[in-house]
Image (cartoon, rainbow, N blue to C red; front, top):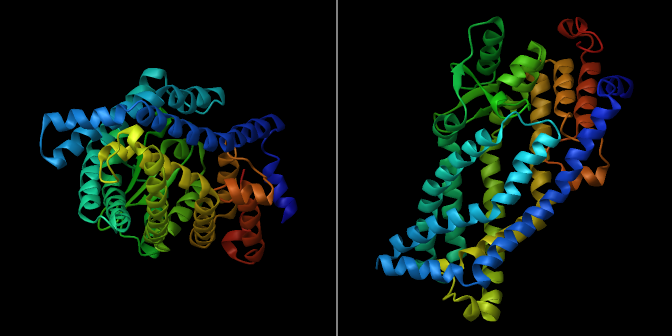
Length: 398
């Protein structure tokens, strides 16, 4: 199995592996820098009392608390987006071009960010109005109720995103009739997935990454694959990737993820409850904050959540990596394409470090490493060499 795994790994040149490692390892530092940028933005809003002035402005406009919250939320979303823009341009545009992953010019990239801002203004404002209404009603248990409302919003967003949000950023079309489409739908039916069509979307207008998903809940289930996967992958690779994605659906990873997320959010709100009380005692008067129910304290809440999620990075990555490994195992059994899946893992390793150390993978990887995925595929293949369909495959699919 090691020899077969190494044969796949050898498909990446030393230069390609060095670039992939540098890109992915740079992402470790981005986790820290993202936190520092979030803390800097919060400090600017609080330390200059700008957040308090934004609240005062909202109070002068209307006497209705919910509308005051909405006015503040719009100001907050716009201003934090502007303050973080230089960093986001580097992280999301400049750096992606440095490693040859982006296909957008600056105008196209900015257009997508404008769409994200539009979505954030709508959903973020509504969410903040409801969360702050709950906080003000439940003075002692606000952190529990706030977590509950957050979970409801995430569930709602995950339900509508495949049908109503994703098409804002990409064009989705029904995959043309072909033997591959027939096989994909057959695999879906065999695994109890209620999908009647397969969609492809134009991710190549944004990046060179390959991806697919089986997403949605409560009647919005959709099988989608991007055009990069279609254009670069063989039918075996496409089926291998979609087998993995179907595993997420069949194994109820969406619902399990919401449960895990819910637990983390409750813990996060508990951390915010403690941190907010401590910070308010020390700097509340200087910042002009009147308590946790005061919307001017939102930058402090955001900063505390950023700290909490930074500290929980190994936990959230481990939860994600575990479900991804489960989906890998399911996909190998459902699609029966070990070589196709291994080839896809090689393509993913163009921007994911292929062979990290155990501690490195534990802390920083939210998916199994490419080496582990290829090795598991080769183990699966070795255990099924007597099967007629596996015998027909060579050691390497290409």
